[in-house]
Amino acid sequence: MSENPCFFLEKLPEPKFHRAIPSVEEMAKIILAAGEHRPLLLVLYHTLARIDEALRLKWTDINFTEKTLTLYTRKGRSGEWKGDSLFMNRALYDTLWNLWGKREQDTWVFYNQATGSRYNRRPKLMRSICSRAGVPAYGFHAIRHYVASRLYDEKKWSMAKVSKILRHTSKQTTEIYLQVQDPEMMRVMESLEADF
Image 1 (cartoon, rainbow, N blue to C red):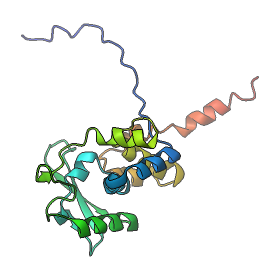
Image 2 (spheres, rainbow, N blue to C red; image 1 turned 30 degrees about the vertical axis):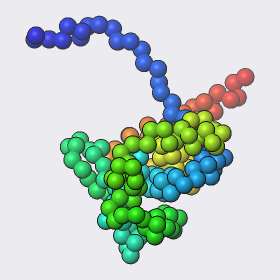
Image 3 (tube, rainbow, N blue to C red; image 1 turned 90 degrees about the vertical axis):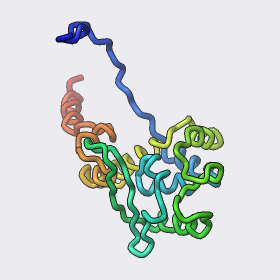
């Protein structure tokens, strides 16, 4: 076949997806309701890690002396594993140090006793935590969105800094991620205020 037979077909409209992120109150309830799983949520919160990056975390990826950790991801174009080194703040350091003291083996930070290895996925965990917290069912990725938005909107860190912490290779990805509004558009709309 030399050409795509569907090329001239009209494309179906796709609704624009708006990701819901927790409010400050909802995030506090989620963290409190996490119970024994709180360390996983705190690692996600303080690293802005994707769930797979956190579950892949090994003890050899953590340097308590230098207060750094390395997260590995395959999000780049090449598809190969890439490590990103991050600084640990005090809350993250304390969380990981407590886990280190209670560890049952020396490989995986989030060890699954049932399989004798790491957790590969935790599909139902966040739903049950949200249910206990009495908030809508958010996914793990909502934590990443929440913290990034908080850093940008409330803490007033620059787009470049937030993009670097998210480990995005493109600033445009971060803009979509944060659902950033063009400040010029606010001034355009304000120019209509005196009309009526």
